[in-house]
Image (cartoon, rainbow, N blue to C red):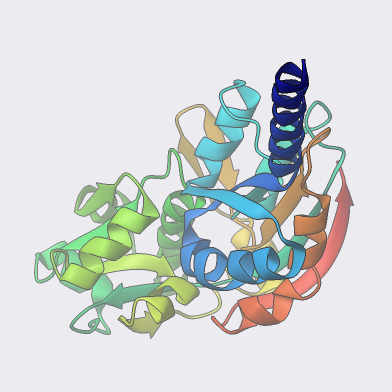
Length: 276
């Protein structure tokens, strides 16, 4: 009798502990351009302070949103490199999100970047890469930047330029190939170039999608990718805790003590709530 009671008590304790353990785990899916910021700065500090275990995954933001919509994944927190994509999750999965950081596009390379990067790509002097616009905001923002560059330089080269740029499935694949030197130059966010120790050429603000003051200029261009049409706008990241999940503490941490950590990589930070 005592043995059976002991076994029952042991099982009850094990179940209770398992339940407690599961309550201290959260899942975060985030934009691939924030790998270093999340894995080396934000997540370790959050785990240290709050005692949570964080299961994290970096993907293209379009892919993350589509997976949530299709019921393939249900993370506690979603971080998108393009905050407007989060509108697609409302009202079923979220009722609000926060815009919290901005970035800029640069041309990066292991051995340096020619000032005349457009002519260098068109002539075959250098090989070039970009991320896939079908799954990644960095990809379609690169196409938008090409459109803006045509206007800025007063030349027509978009179609030929696109045909000569190799597309990588993920922005992490692109940055890895740039670091290895298997592709000469590529189009990255500034923080990614800094994090990977790459040389990079900063672009004029009129085309690098960094400055909200040029929003009216950015919005004059658009690109179609599959069924989606993207119009130019300044780069801004969004974060949301999904309904019924356990992401509130993580979101609150990112929007407070996490912001100085993001600024270490050169990201500009701010907080604006959006009711979806």
